[in-house]
Length: 440
Image 1 (cartoon, rainbow, N blue to C red):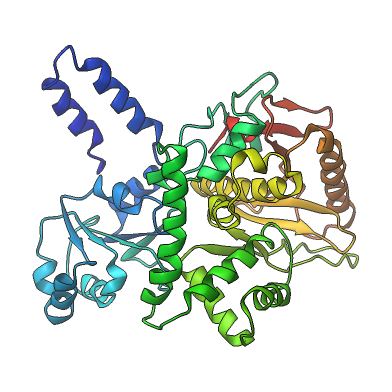
Image 2 (image 1 turned 60 degrees about the horizontal axis):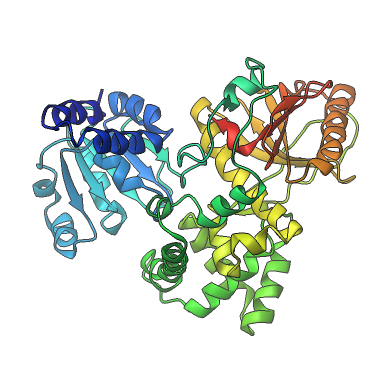
């Protein structure tokens, strides 16, 4: 077991006095409170791979997580180490193992050197905040890290496992949560970035604005050394907020950006979009390509999301108390929140998330694909008033698959995720589950 937490805890307990026991236990619970779901995956890959790469958006907790496994650290934000990495990487790689190489993308050639030399499994842990299109192979395992889900941040009570739900192995009727409509809005605006979880409102506003500033002024240049216009990057991101959780076209995004920023060629905007994707700030998921016997045109256009919905609320300068009064906007951002959490939870059992929508606008907000080619359909609703509409949608899709399928299996589960407080199962076998009850 590479995780050293238990060892550290036992050592600390020996040195603690009775007076400090209460506060010590509170700190331990807080650490365990924000347990990263991905840890089991890291433990497995540390045992089977020579090196692992933890990559994800700035601020999602890569370094904190990797530090738990490392005995030494090489921070490649240090220009001195970068120069040594290019001149004589062997010197750096002789450090105590396991070694964390933080932000290795500042000297990417060091990865080639690691693959050349002989070492034990788990000796090298790399992190990076932008996508260098690394490929997983026998020597390198990839770990995709996202901002904290609501369960990881301690906001969801985790009484309902998504995996158990999909496998119909849990009774949900009567399970409740304290995370209601207004509290979900606060969690959405706060976001899942590790450093923000325990900040007060004033600190949060400042931190979130500084985060956007770092992205548009530094990171989008640092990624490839090309100087870019921070004002254009800001206007592009702000235009993107109006496109999230929708199938809007790139043309709409370009036109809105031009309207707010001014004349700029399409090629430039596409380049900015590409780099923001490489920084894991924005992302897209394509539609489920279902094979039907009869022609049913399925929409495959990418659906747009932020890696964390707080990026959108920061750009719009909208606070929780205003968000709860704007139902349409709250719905779009809530779907972005659900998208984030579903990706975190489903990744632990090999799940992949996309969506279904056809030319008749029959839709499922999300589809979770399992490793055995089975699926779970997921609809998202803020209001109990609209749950009946989602039930009808899900049953229609199931009927369509039954009637016209050629290769697809029946959905293994149908789920409606809400911002409500109580879970239940309908007579049709559809689970209605609050986001504040979910875990992996």
